[in-house]
Structure formats: structure tokens, C-alpha cells
Length: 318
Image (tube, rainbow, N blue to C red):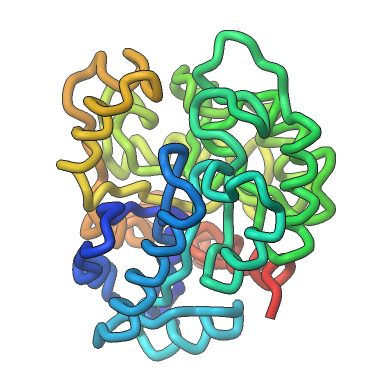
């Protein structure tokens, strides 16, 4: 039986003329779900809405891609060996301090949102902050409204306390869409065992990424990814672990962001040289790799896509 592959975070250029064809590199038997980033801390509401309209139009026009509004859509699209597409946001700045905008973003296909990107904002603290004030009152309001409109709260890039607070106040699953395990590799973007357990307690899922600097000393290999996967499975159970490539199809733009917004990053992003990402073609070999390591077929299916699908079935709105 062909297995669904669910990649919970991948990045196209954040430009209103960006091509979506690179997403077709995930074409495979069994289909795929790709969550495509549509904005982060430098973007406002109108920027993100413009990006979403562009991406949606381009996906609709593509032969291999299809927008998914519901979890049932994902199953139908993947069942036809096609690629389902939804969107995510890596900061709450695109909300523009207006909770009503969350419903608009949800209608345009945003299915996950994280309150902060690396550094503190009105919603909470980030993972690169020296002081961790946790989720603010505004951040708590955002989480409550996300629960209402069917957007899943996401703790990646947030501080430890902010992530723990999200798990405490959310009435639905909280995920870490693209975060590795700090016990395996001590990087400020990786999460602690306490964060992982709190996420699992909400029914959420930790998406282990394919980014070299988060897996180890810039090592985007299946072997390195599997170290994090197996540690997380041993810690919180097979039902709460997934994958997320965090692949940057917009490498040139990412480098430009380093230049334009140096305050968003620190030497934990740069000390190992040019960041290496796991390409889609390598990620597509993960199921075979885990099988050779002796993983059971049902466990591979859960981590490859079944667990994030379960979160969608519970949290997304029709």
C-alpha cells in the first residue's frame, strides 16, 4: 500500500511572482501534502494575502498540485498520487493586530501559525531571546482564535516557555512543525524533552526537519534525521512524531534575508557555513531507509504522514 507523505513546512520565494513548479519534485506514488510558507515576521496582513492569492492561483493552474481545504481533500488528492497544498505562517505579524484576520487567513488556506519567529514580539518570546517571558495575553488571544477558526498553533521558532504556554492554553493540538530534538543536538532552534512531552499531551506532533544545522553540524542526511526521529519516538511515542523538510526552494532569497534582517538570526545559523537543506529527492527515500532499519510498516506510515493527518482531522474546520 502506498503511504501518504506529509511535509509540514517548506519554503518557496516569498514573492508575488514565485513559481510553484519546484513543489512537483515531491511527486510520488501515494501522494503528498505540502505546507508552504506564506509569510513571517517582516510581512504584514496585506503582504501575506497577496502571496496567498498568488500561490493559490499558481497551484490551481498546475497539473500536479491541488489546494486542500479539508483533511478529506488531502486523502482524495493524495489517493490520486497528486500533491495537496496548504499554507503556514512563521510569525503572528501577518495578523496585523486584528484577530478577525485569522478567519480570512484560514479561508485562504493557512492551517498552522506560530506566534513568534526567533525573537520576541507582541505575542511572546522567541527561541533566540536571552529572556523568556513566554506567551503574552495577546498571544493567548491569538491561540484561542486559532482554535476557533481551525488554524493549528505551532511552537517552532518560539521560546521554550512560549511553546509550553501554548500547550497549556490551547483547546486543540499544538504542533512543532519543523523542530528537532535538543537532547540529540543542542541548538537553540531545537526543542527540549519537556516541550516535546507537552506537545504530545495536546495530541500534537513534532515535525523533525531536514535542515543540516538543526540535525547536527550541518548534516542534512537521513541518518541524522533518523537519530532525531527515533529519540522523539522513544520519548513521546510513535503517534506524536512526523516530518517536515523545511526545504528552502528560495535559497537566494533566504541569503538576502540574512543581509536585510540580521537581527532575526545569530551565529547558531552561520557558524557551520552555508546552511545545507535536505532535498525532496532525499526525503522521498525516508520510508525505505526506516524500513531497512527495521521499523514496522504501520510506524513508518504514522511518521511519514498519518500523524499530521490525524491532527488535521481533529483541528481543521470544513
